Image 1 (cartoon, rainbow, N blue to C red):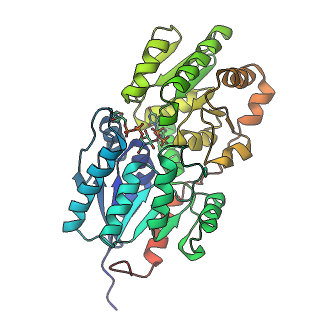
Image 2 (tube, rainbow, N blue to C red; image 1 turned 90 degrees about the vertical axis):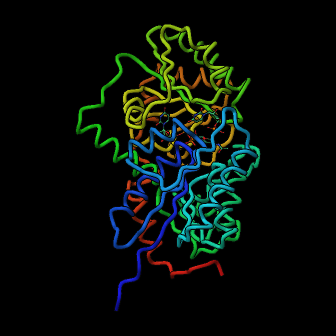
Length: 376
Ligand code: UD1
Ligand code: UDP
């Protein structure tokens, strides 16, 4: 019997978190050339922030659409990605288009594949808040992507249950853990081998915020809460690697830029960010990926959002939803900075999002799936 030809995967990547979370899959597939042929299709929804992630993991896109514009709107991202990916699919016929998560690149990639009748595999499927305005537009991006996809790879059983409740068939779903934890553990191990990790002298908050729902007043409130914490904790330092979005910078720079104990930096390369998480005392973030990664490093997280599609860390007690309410942020951060027992309760290292082997499970399932050349 002859071996089948390698399974051809087109892996669509547009933003920083997609690069982090799809890198383990691409690298594992590339390590098995007898089984997989891989094309990375980059929309370039992000530019600099994507480039640094691709470089760290050594990913080289087969095509780079380079669509990013300053202060881009959602229609532009959708149209430019859909058009560019479709053009590429006109000349290339992968067996699968792989998309991850809930960005506009994710949805455009799934839609382009559907228009070419190519099956879609959705990595990090099934996350839901059940509120289509929060997070906006990600909740609808992931719902629509889920209904296009043929195979669904939810990170947790809770995410699987969301898909089942929407009527998707159980045999199209496999719980794998989150590939982001594969990336984190791989990177953290490398850092430990090179002694690239250290501890802060005195308490340090690592802060990130970028979500569209927090632009404007909520982000101002978050900054005010941080200023209050700095006033009441004279030894506290804050590190904020600031997202490149002008909507973030126009709020954050004037409010926090002059404070002697706040370090505003450019976005960090992935290993430097992992080292910053590891050295921090406490993390304040509205990032999805960061709240998943923090439990592996034993860091409590205050989540700067009103709703969550990631309840598992809250249930495990390592994360707390505080929104952008300054009084709440100050109260909860105060407790963690002042009460060692409260801190110890939140600093658990059990990670409900993965064990570092998600990519392998996904590739195994793709290989086991009956070969189709087109959607039925
Ligand atoms: C996007 C995703 C969000 C994800 C986030 C990760 C959508 C709708 N949103 O939001 O789900 O959590 O990425 O960070 O898909 N910019 C640069 N250089 C870069 C990246 C961004 O200058 O490398 C600036 C540009 O002015 C760009 C703006 O940031 O227009 C916003 O980028 P965009 O991708 O639209 O939104 P994000 O807030 O990054
Ligand atoms: N990250 C990074 N450098 C930074 C900030 C974040 O490498 O300066 C990483 C972080 O560890 C996580 C991912 O980027 O893996 C999260 O990206 P982001 O917060 O932009 O998006 P989200 O996860 O909210 O979609």
